[in-house]
Length: 581
View 1: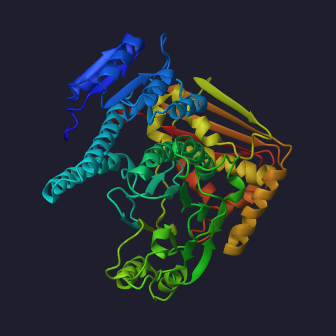
View 2: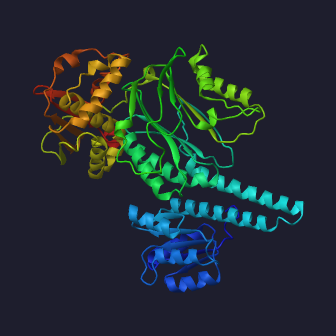
View 3: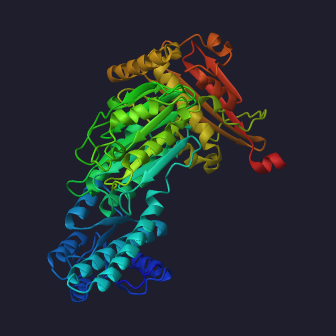
């Protein structure tokens, strides 16, 4: 338990079922000094007499609700220092805001997840222990040097404990991909910089770098929420605009006044050979070509997260075509503001000179590390330093392999989903994600085919929207310059879109001989000469046209109808038991 089990915890909930669950979880994990109360007035009498190390409060209680209890704790000198975690089934913005305004430091949603519950309990107790020890240290400053040294060692042990607890959340999403190299050098025990990576069901790679104001434990408060939102939304296939919007909303709720987070979110799609960048307050993101040339810079377009509400981020997302061997560098300002013994800063110009002044672009990451060491020498590190080198490997991309087999199924479907979309829901609708979640609720076994199905749904929808309704020509993406023009036109036409529709039908067939999923997508656009398109051999070096090839490789059939504005994809598979039979 890392010396946290001897700390006192008080839990208050008028629901005896949840109170029993809380008591069981704490006792099972070694927290023996736990008191539970179903009466809030009785609990307050005990808390006022003997303040605990941590207070767990239900929000809705008949005698004294959680908000009033929290304010009473904060207004009393004897209990004002006690950390409070709210436990609530209402995790809406208003309830969360009221909890933090009343004085809570965190919240736990009902129904209770044991993993989340214990992690947050340990984090709060670690912070409380550190606070108590620091307070004790201040009271003993007049004592001997040896006594102060002992206390410092204890504080350091507790800071290390806090770092380990936070690291389970903060660093679990650190990039674990062969194309991402990174360095994280904290100025204190707990870094104020965060670096997360995740993959979407459609095969995109999301990389998030964040830099909280300050560093240490205060900055780590927001990192737990960022990790939870980022990993969850990326796994469900949300766009980087949606993810950044939710991160901003969450940080506005939980960060104290004066704290904010500079962040950059990158979506790398090696299949479609494109990168999207959304930079909010970080230094310029740099794209270095395979020959060491500076191909593009992405400066910050918006203020940092956690300061003001922002309606949406779509208009500030920048895109570019990527080629094999390109390197995308994203970094915190700790690099360019690093100082040498003379007090001079490393600077943006020296960073770019380092990256563009080498013959082998693959050595850029090592050259920056070497340059920083030689520049700073023995100078004290004043800020957290984080750097990520994201290598674009478009030629190594291979289409996923689908379970194929000629399965003939007849008769009516077992279930069907029908969706009709029209403006204003079309432009930023996460259709693939929504459809997949509806499908999995009907057929849980589809989770084994999540990546393939997400790719099929997203590709067909993108084609219907971009080429069908908006009339964009994919040939415009034949060059890097045309690629940028394509996405500029895409954003402009989306903003002006006020008519048209897309209809989607999903039909599922379950038979003894196998399973079949039919996706039928139709749009109100002019269509295209699909015979010419599908007759062309795939070009692995092209910036466009790989999507249809990908879908065809996954499906048993891909058939276009009418004038090309309707397509039907047939995906088939056999369950493991059926294959063995």
